[in-house]
Length: 372
Image (cartoon, rainbow, N blue to C red; front, top):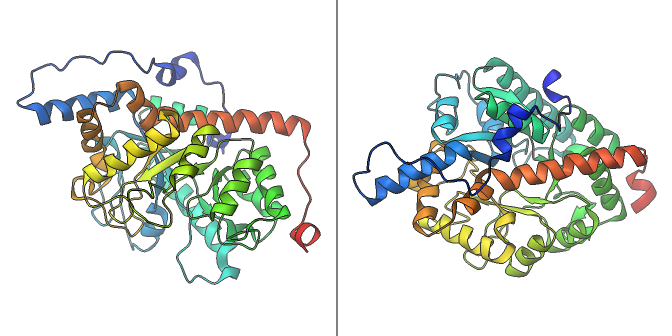
């Protein structure tokens, strides 16, 4: 498809959105707000108008699969995500999870992932006024410039590879951008095997980002050593504040900051807490440990999880940004949080992949050869 052609060099007009100085003063409100809370919320809307949200995880594909009929363009009450609410929340990039439900037979993983991938492409094609399929950083910018939400494919589960680099390349050719390295024999509690290291190298060559949310500390450490592109934790908060297994300990957060990876904090009651203030506490903690360049947002809407009342659906991002403004976050750091950090990771992966493809042929390694 034309949408999936690499475009790392958007036009000057399109690039302007991405190149807006992060510390540029925002326009003043037309009328004075009634009180401090409304002033912060108005300021949050203004900031997000200039620096929209890149949401790192959406469970929408599987949620839509369970519905007999839906219309995301007009609004869909059966889910937490539709085009009107994406616009209200100033979301301009959405990573659609291709994860599979627990209990699915392993032999069905490849087919089920392909079915979800096809569903996302079909949904995007059916909503051209609001959604646009994207893969590269340039295409994300193009979609935002045209008033569309850029939809990116992934994360997918590593089981979808069926221990085959050929399937990884096929999934990438169909648009896959993120792969979660958990739940396989080569990325397990024991760490990353030799074949697993070859998977990571091939992902770098293709431009597929590694997601380590839920991965063991041994696997995470080895991927951080092996990957030449920044890694993601698409649904991880601070374990020091809430001892959830997918949340990250302080030492791993510090190491992630040292390699310029990205921890995307989920807006869920289970991992971050029942209020918007709890979510903001985690964002504060991750920023302090990993740095402002290494923290992002992951709505985790439509993934079967409960959310704080103030963040009940994807339209509520302005309320979170208002809370961070209340805490003294600078506009520079907020612009990195919502948009800039994900753009950096995508661009770095795009450039690394292009350079790697010029010097390295696709790997033909098999799990039996390396780990058998």
